[in-house]
Image 1 (cartoon, helix red, strand yellow):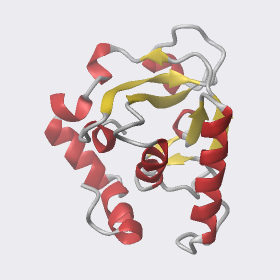
Image 2 (cartoon, helix red, strand yellow; image 1 turned 30 degrees about the horizontal axis):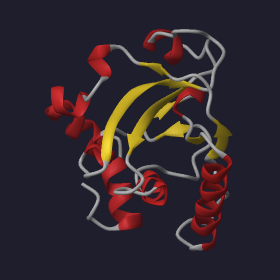
Image 3 (cartoon, rainbow, N blue to C red; image 1 turned 180 degrees about the vertical axis):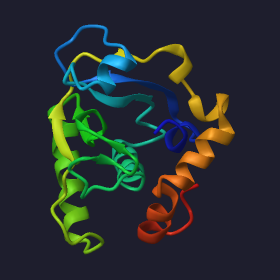
Image 4 (cartoon, one colour; image 1 turned 30 degrees about the vertical axis):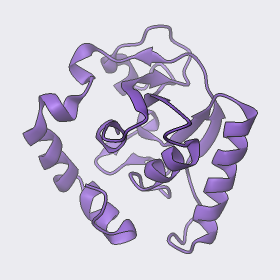
Length: 162
């Protein structure tokens, strides 16, 4: 989820990590073992004068399968469920409205599984996870295609989201 956001002016940083659970400073192995309650997540710092929160939400929706309650594509389990973590009431309202618009768009026929939750402590992932798409571009691209993510994006949103 880093690459889709990392390419825009106004995005100051995109950090891979974990949030929403109860364990302090979890490791990737602990999160994947489903023992922490955390989601794998990205924390995005942005300049709202250049890049709006609403645009962040749109890009987010265009990268996920919002109907999947059990994870995303090949990644299964609670840590791979989708959620939007808001930092203010304004963000909560915007996220709820964007979810409602997506539901009403007719693009998806099943319930939207993505939760909208208050932000909790965010723990950055290990260094090897940061900007993985740049460090391991061949693996990143093989996985995006092989997992079905790219064809899903193309089917629902067109090919503009590379």
